[in-house]
Length: 394
Figure 1 (tube, helix red, strand yellow):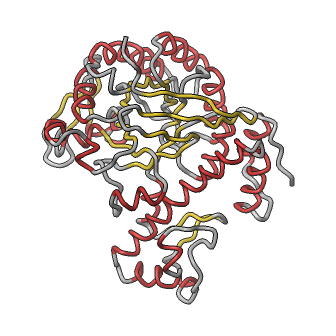
Figure 2 (tube, rainbow, N blue to C red):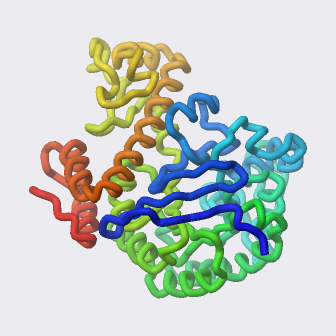
Figure 3 (cartoon, rainbow, N blue to C red):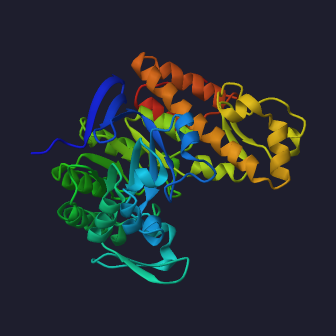
């Protein structure tokens, strides 16, 4: 028997919310959860270098196997000594399996039992991604956490296709486990599927828990479904996953979603939201979203967020950022990206600290009041929080 490459320990609970430690043995690094993992599709967050990510408090970054396989290629990354050396990052890295591209590149993909064939958006060449090839690529890339290739369908899909994807995901996890050549260095997570159907989610949960993988992701959500259905599936899955394994909700990054789903017992999140919304000139703050291209910020000389300690907020005003954005300067986008990433890291830090101090419900109420000062809270969030005994004041 080998020593597992990842150690996961629940340190404190407050209701269903959990503060945990995830230690990556080879990195000599311990990540604190709940945590948000910033997406760096090709090993980098657009507009930021690794030093800035360290300063933001980022603990784990996420790379995409499909895109990294297209270019520069897993073999080249392996020749460089692995993804950590390639991108100069000594903390945790997780690679997605490439499964999400079955939805995001639907018009360029073809699904069979063998795997999924993609047509490159760059030069039109075709690539067959099987469970075995996905794991082979991820073994070469060398991330700390690697994801099983699953059969992903759009969240709003109903009928036989969802059931087919649920059962195929189970068949594929067995192929992924068999293909995994570095279990002593990389932790392979399974992905729960089943759409919005609790019966299918139960099937996926029971079958994948039997495989006893080091961690589990809740997949197939955050794709346009109603929020009232979204939170119920998150809650249903989180309550049934093993208490001693990390629970990863894929593709979720809106601040409100992070708070609510942490309350439901989720440990890990990822999304492109923080960096993508920055490219549209929008900043995440403790009082909501600021669209800094708007003319109202032309003479606003305050920081983006007075509560933020990032380099941008310490040194530049909303007025200056507005000027950069309206004159097509890439610097403006880079500064907002740095701020947005830092904001989400700080938000998760506040969640963790409130769990440790047993004041998480109070933090949630304070967050909601700040984010919705008019008291008009989204119904789905009120219902979700009430389900774990966090009642909001009207």
